Length: 309
Image (tube, one colour):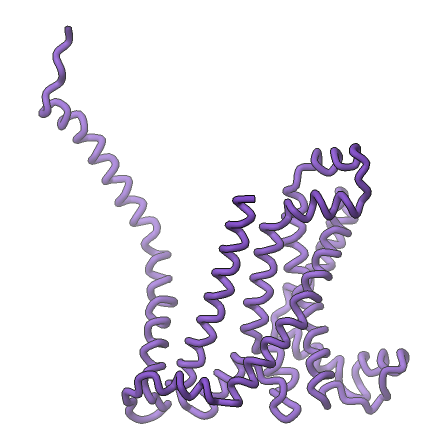
């Protein structure tokens, strides 16, 4: 009968394994340390600084003083901030379904093998390559009264005259900005949805057709349920991007007419860098961050439900 190994022998055999495991852990830590440093310097420290500033009266020039939660109490009573949040939510509700439907329609349309489908994928994706500022200036020119092609289009459709100003009312200004964003961002969502469509096994849709399901029934009962993770991801990205809208309104409407197209981020910019109230602007940023965190939590909830279904 073989005697049991002694504790010393067991420890000697474990020693090299533990050393090798510790070496691998150190190598892994060394490999991820640059990314951790970037997150620390460019995210965690600014995040902590933002919350610290939000608890102070922090002018751009001069000494700052502790005010506690006064900035947050002021935000709750600030009608300008409340109006900007309401407008941001209105813009988000308006643009999210438009982007979603347009991107899904294009993804289904070009989900075909062959070179023509790839050509159209490139064409639809091209506006995404253009920067937001450049796209906003382009559409600002297109919507110029009496000069831009959008004015000619409105005349031919009977929607206005050559003197019509697309930014004269809050509704027309919002519609113009929404059209620009749909043109600019549909391609990005289309690519995400297309990747989700292409990950669905062809055998499932073929089996549905064999069972007698039509194109709409196959899409509704097979494609959409399997596309739920991608749909949730695209939806959350779209909502988060809409809540952070700034460039398009800053360039195209400048908050007009009569400050009716000021988004939440735009109001934070005005508070911090026009009124020079960095403490109050930091408090508004913290409140907006809470909203974005809630959106991220919604994303995780949707994905978790999908995984358990």
